[in-house]
Amino acid sequence: MGITREGRHKRRETGGRRAKFRKKRKFELGRAPAMTKIGEPRIHEVRCRGGNKKFRALKLESGNFAWGTEVCTRKVRVLDVTYNASNNELVRTKTLVKGAIIIIDAHPFKTWYEAHYGIKIGIKKASKESSDVDISSKCKESQEKIKKRQADRTLESVLDSQFASGRLLAKVTSRPGQTGRCDGYILEGRELQFYQRMMAKK
Image (cartoon, rainbow, N blue to C red; front, side, top):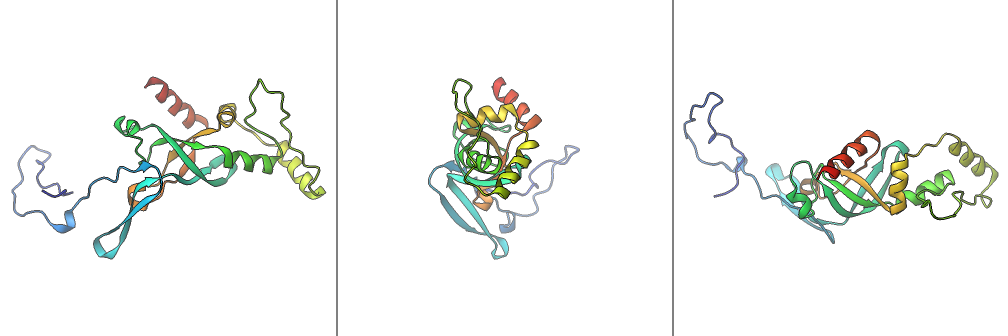
């Protein structure tokens, strides 16, 4: 039997049974889940109703992720799946779905931050390395710009420690099995605290 999305086989809210007045229809079909894994990109094109196309990602290794407070987006590698509110099995099998909490590579964001603010982040407490980046080679205008940015910059200590490890927690907002992409945003603030608590419970 094929997968279907119809709901006529279900009972009514009152508990009464519905009459079976027709069989399954093509326009009510459903398809098997993509169960997107981490690996070398493998995307299948699926022809849908009306000649539209869906892109079924079977494997993905990178995506575009946004750093909301800094208004910065970079293409980064997806490293691991750490939490999924709907199903622990999706974490065990490292399946990429919308809403999954994943670990991404922090280096593209780190290099941007150092170039933008002229300050190194993610320095471990034990090391005696200076946090300032040498900007003497830049023109005066650029130096003034960077100094202005430094005056009102803020960075959460939790994010700083994540940068030190070279990995960031992010949330997937795209639908890999429908669009063939794995895009999302970096977790910050209260949302980051919430997911860290949930992961600590598990």
